[in-house]
Figure 1 (spheres, rainbow, N blue to C red):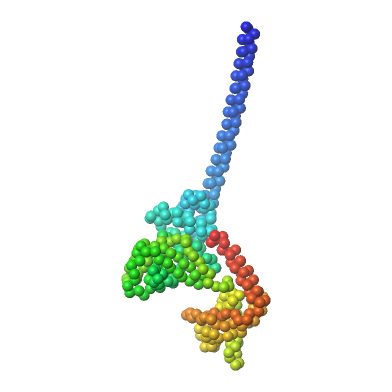
Figure 2: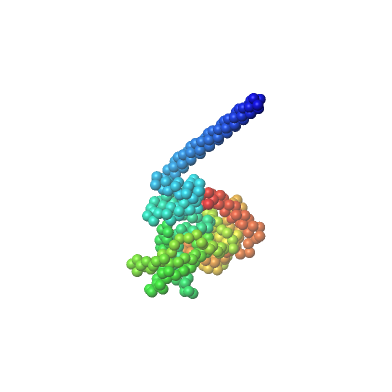
Length: 345
């Protein structure tokens, strides 16, 4: 009996020792896990503070105020977006600002405009397609369609929530409040755009009828040109083929595509160049190191205060020259895209 008790006590003692050792091991493991978690949390906190400090430093270097920096940081984090992108990419900036505007009825309009300008987001180059109605330039003309009726309009103003379209030269415009309308406009050197929206209100400013329509990103873009074109700045030696003794006139080449070229001349030299719609020309110019001689015909004329420009359509262009211009345009467009891809997203 004594031997059994001794064996039992011995087993119990051994078991208690093992349990103690296991508990001790578990405690040590838990302690190490907690230390690891604490280290991770500490590193994450330190990193977050460092990134925030760096973000504020970068934003201040761009001339932004403390208030807008706070907004960009707060709402970027709220949207789970990288705050640094709001300083470099227009699309990210607009997403963050939209969130801020939607959550704050008393948002600071002037602060946003000023910040957008400082970051270079207030202008979209012609070779960058519009992605939101906010990107439409003021005074952009177009036509409004409603129930088979068409009315001339122009973008009169815009804020962070609405665009304001002026109905041009209408004595008694229809009551469009609450109606869904379509606006079509041609963006120069880009494409034809179509937008639709509900007229939230109609404003009357000194007899001007202005439609208030909410901003949105649902823009339909229709390419209007057969060939893409890029801006250039080159001299174009030109002969008017209809003249018996054609004189040589130097125009300024302003943009080019595989289908044609736009050439301009100062208004005070207009009489020197007797050029009208349908006039055929022979043009000599150098494009990226290659000399080209191409015939063309004037298809449109645009007069400005100091210059007059002629849109020339190439005629009987050699396949090799057409191919070279196509490659030139593609190469230049690629360079332009690389320059602006980080800014415009």
